Image (cartoon, rainbow, N blue to C red; front, side, top):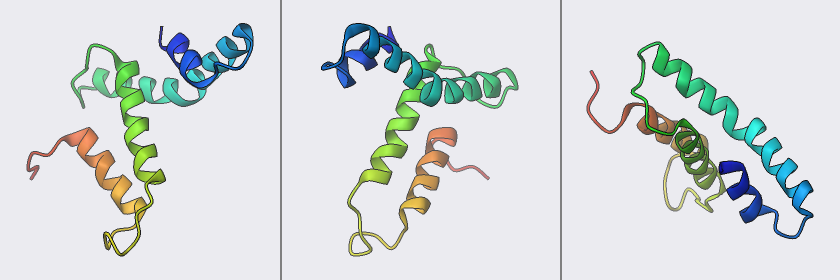
Length: 100
């Protein structure tokens, strides 16, 4: 289902078979590694699992990509994009609660 959604959103001008293949390749290249990492972390007891780890992987990548693509300058924040992304990843993994 995720592959079909990706293909429909990103590749409407391509032939259906090509679009499907590229959607599948994108899933394998971008989403699968994160999905696998989240599932493995859950099995080790490091994180709780959500009902759909593919959605978690997609959300994770979306947040990181949006921060990277944002036209932010030192006029808006003293932090580099890399620092902001590190902080966003930390929030995604550990939440906003105060960890000691």
